[in-house]
Image (tube, rainbow, N blue to C red; front, side, top):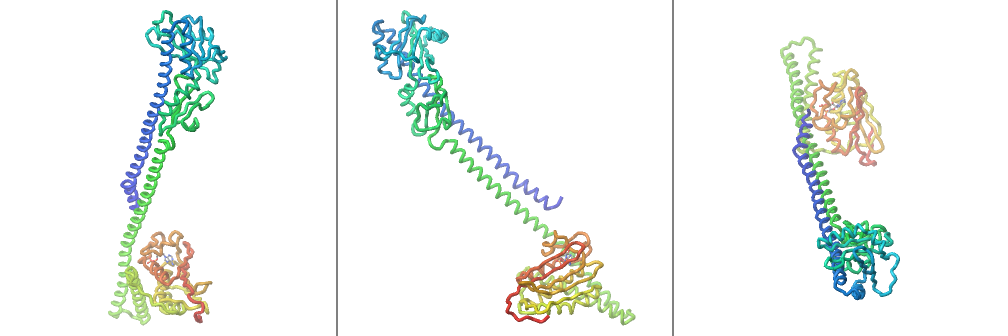
Length: 527
Ligand code: ADP
């Protein structure tokens, strides 16, 4: 496994994973907090609904108590008038009926003496007989001293307007009676429950009573849609009626949800920042490690680069000084080799010195107006012998009438030599270089073409980085420092110029140095 990958994994394990785990924990605890708040809230709503139900039941109980009392205590002839007094106080009650325990001899008392009962409130012997099971139940409760009330829908059950609350009178009465009221459910809600509901709602809540069957709201403390109610319970006393509740304005859920969402977004952003930071640190570290590796290679490469020419120079000088060389021709060859090796050493040392100057930011350029062709010719003057010595064919094409450039003569020469050096180093059998100058719309350029091993696109950018060397395939045995092109790149940047590279493996390379045309009115120079 590569060192970079190892570091990446360590990073993920040490920094990222705990943070992500923590985020996951936070997210889950957020939702459980939300659930907790929701359940507390639901319970609170339940309690309110329960208290209203209980209140409605209490009211009905107390009414049945009153009717019970008047049925027990009044003279038979005064029962009706006593009942009417009761009815006048209770406008939600339409009428009171009572009968003997057999359900016969039914009396139905309404508010007005001779009021005709409406169809839906009609209490008949037969309608009571239909309720025999209910009556049975009531009698059973009554025998254990508990006066229970049973709601029975009468008449039009869809509108639910008529509702009978049935109970049996207490057993102290010589003849136990079945009694009850016919109640107008809507009036009961709007007249009797209204105050209690308003009080329960207070400032915080919104309460509404509605008919489940037709989804009609009978009473609400503020305008509301049934679907907006948070908690809904049946109204015990009135089958078909429900009572619902929610918070006024923003609900607890909204508050909790908004809070959770905010926290989630925050956690998300933090995670993204963290991942970004880890990735950045990882990348920087990887780059640093790569640089450390490249520097290590550089030291061994340079040592080799220094040693080779030195040992050659030493060997040939020794041979010459011992006068072992017989022919003048051979002597000349040895002198040439010594000269070339010295030049090679000089170039390498120049590169290293320039590099350290650039690293320290101490490299200074002496810019002057000059003809690029002159610089090229100057370089070729000293370099041609090296090219010939290495067996290269050189072709030179200098464009005429191109504008001068503003540059540091020595630096440009050095850049060109580095590119020529590479052309020589990275060529195999086809030893050919072409040096060409020219002009485009807004640049002056010099390019060096070789028929060498070429460079894969993947490396085109990286070879200009310090110490970077292509370390695969054919380049494996070619020694170098990895400084040359980074120096060229530095020099071109300092001149406001660019480097273009056209190269493919096996097809040779073209390195093109482009200089900006600073001032078109500049004097042109014949090439
Ligand atoms: P080096 O000292 O290794 O030559 P450079 O910075 O001059 O360092 O070049 C970087 C790398 O670019 C080289 O190691 C080589 O792989 C590649 N390179 C440069 N010039 C050429 C060329 N003309 N043909 C093929 N490869 C080249």
